[in-house]
Length: 224
Image: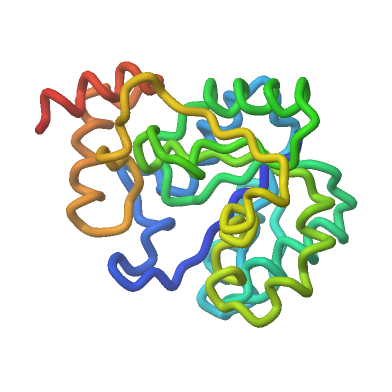
């Protein structure tokens, strides 16, 4: 399975957040390192824009020998559409670059569920119970390719590539995965300076070792 990792520089609340470092490693690098622990993901492609600001991301990918693709800044849907066509991708897993604590076990679990079921999307974001920053979507490329016209006049759908499918969930085969306990109030993604400081504390408490979601939750509880 290919993982398309969505990344950009021009975040408003925390400028250049994906390239900000936590203990000598950028947030983007941390996300990539965690995805690489997946047993099901065979290739990572960083999907970024052709904006001059995102030259930083392209430079990083070249240095680390990570595949990347550049296209539209604001029309993220079109960026995915072009990438899928260019790389002839049948199915892919979507992760965003503001999730430095993403659990690869969740990724593997969802890919296996996707492979066993004839569905268009396996997700944990249609009805949220997972913490923010643990969002994973496995998507059949066919629905992206055939829905381009449908999202062409909706800016929200162009920016958030699965919003069209979730809004029209009765037209698609979508399997939502939920936790027994609702943890959607927790945030392990980075959008603000406060988020950055919180994630940094978790990584420091873990001594910068790899830990899964259960251990992340235990540390986060102590910090709060």
